[in-house]
Amino acid sequence: MPLQAMPTSVHLPVRPEWLGRLREEIIAPDLPIVDPHHHLVERPETGRYLLPELLADIGSGHNVKATVYLEWLSMHRAAGPAELRAVGEIEFANGVAAMSASGNYGNTRVCAAIVGLADLTLGAPVEKVLEAMVEAGGGRFRGIRFISATHPDQQSWGSLINRPAGLLMDRRVREGFARLAPLGLGFDAWMYHTQLGELVDLARAFPETRIVLDHVGGPIGLGRYAGKRDEVFAEWSAGIRELAACPNVHIKLGGLGMRMFGFTFHTGELPPNSEELAAAWRPYIETCIAAFGSERAMFESNFPVDKGSCGYAALWNAFKRIAAGCTPAEKSALFAGTATRFYRLSEEPM
Image 1: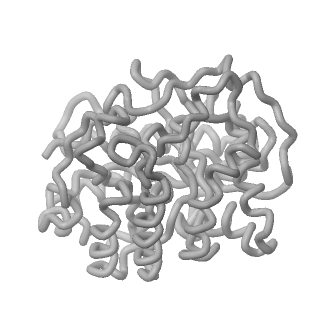
Image 2 (image 1 turned 180 degrees about the horizontal axis):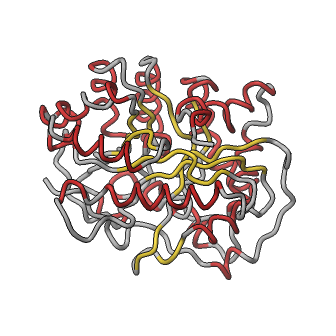
């Protein structure tokens, strides 16, 4: 099976003029943050979001100490063996990390850890791809994301990808997955709430492999689920609690600005402020924290994808509002500590 292709209409467009209509004071500006999930990309369907654009968002006032780069089919090699073309994305992200490490672009350690894409349907031979990525990452490569998200209604939110159902249950995929832990690599999972049982099964089958579930586990808010938020929440939250019983699984708190969640902030005359975002997102985030605990949960920006719904300053302010009742130790974990440990940021080349 070829590496997964990115659809052209699944994400909300970023509108700088609209986002510029809102300014708000930064809450707790000194609180250290590690942003464990962002992309860098330049394609016709996504626009340009490279180091200068990321730094502009980071410079909006929050104390972002480091970031983690997540694959988004960026800068793959144009030639060479198909299975190795994704190594180009690791080379690209490591180059950005080297630029950041020079100190010429501010104090944030951008791309301090790198998560790439390797085709697990290759089975055991994917090990050679992973080894090439380890080498290309210059000490920053930490694992892969292999998206399994699929649903019959996905055209409702613009996704045109038809992935096989039950992908994480596939024998060859698991044969490839088994090569991660021996290389010290972790796994980012992205799927919809209807598929969480597959990740439970995978996590139980590979208890030694570190797994993090992206974007609160994808409770769908469109298609057949439109107008059924309470019903979806009940099914999703049950899946989250079952998954949290697997001690090798962590969760990312964010991604809620994506189209498929069914929120409508992007339709407003003004972008949402942090109070509005916090009110909408709180039930999902608090459920995840209650299930996983602060030591296995981490806030994420998912920029530039979530930038179609809100600004970087408002997003992190919303997270700070949601976490206002947490202890200082819990806040430290949620905003930086969990991500630092999961992605082993202390091991970044100096």
